[in-house]
Image (cartoon, rainbow, N blue to C red; front, side, top):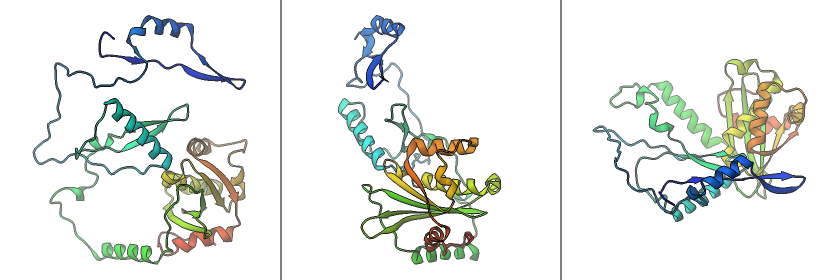
Length: 300
């Protein structure tokens, strides 16, 4: 190579009648041949040389580096991240860092089904979320605040004992909805029957309150998958619902745009089956964990 600048060209694998082949147009072939001396077969084994001008970010006195907690990753994402990090380290393109300034890793799926590792730098541009987080900002702790804390303590200490998830086993979700809220429980059978891993509940707002009951039951499932995505990606999940028509959510002929978005999200990221379960059994499971939380009441 004449310089340290390079480009990667990728030929796409196409499946035709069960046979896979590489298909590249004549224009692309001619272009690759013309510039073959600057096209790389792989990533370079070293960083580019120092440039004429160096850049730095100067912090204001008293400022602190931006720090974000890590995102939860599914077992599949965690395995892929380790492979990508080891590959880049072996190439000499990255190295371990002790910098207090961090940004979490997130993954986006590629068209071929693999995962693209990205860095979420949005935290660097965020302003303080609430005024109470500012230094020397006075606030008044009242009895209602203390009461809320005590209610949370009571809810956590009286709820059924939760188990830790086993990433090698499949999951079960039971979801339900009322007029004003939705709830769900994530469970797993680790040899002692189905046991709860986590509970969730969410109050519906705005347009959600006007959804037909079919969509309220469906949004409960979508919210559950979003909340527990780090567990469910890469594993088979059985969803129990007391709304029989949801069994046909993936196959019904007429879908609203909202339902299309939901199905697209579920089908893109998860392997799941929706199974009808009578009302009383579903709500008994949910109420066992949610009845101590004074958020809403399920009809029953």
